[in-house]
Image 1 (cartoon, rainbow, N blue to C red):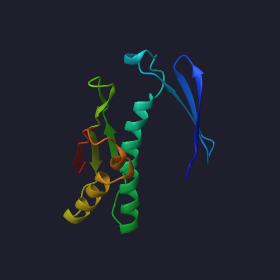
Image 2: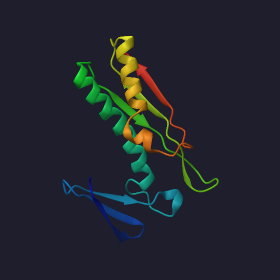
Image 3: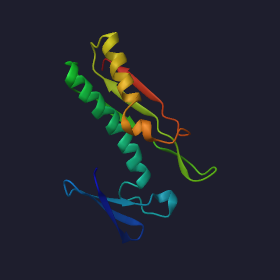
Image 4: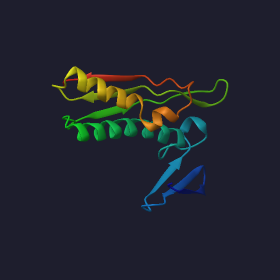
Length: 136
């Protein structure tokens, strides 16, 4: 179990503290929802969690199985909706993979991204497309 604490700092900003390490991060409401957008919004952190979870779990599998994984990079977009309530509608993720992976390695790593803990935890109504780009 990991405990994360948060304090409201005023003006729609919060500070969160990661219990085990003491690392702090700040959030701000986004510009399109009454904030200044000076830091990650809470929903930005959800997108960040998905992209880093997918890449981290793929890295774990790659390390375990001796698969080349250096140079992997990824990006994610956050698409919001207000219908029926304000929420994340879609998190399109693009992962740029190394060249030279076998079809079996590609399948294993792609499956890992699609089953990472954050992916498995998100609302089933949220669209989570993942695009893999190989050989750059």
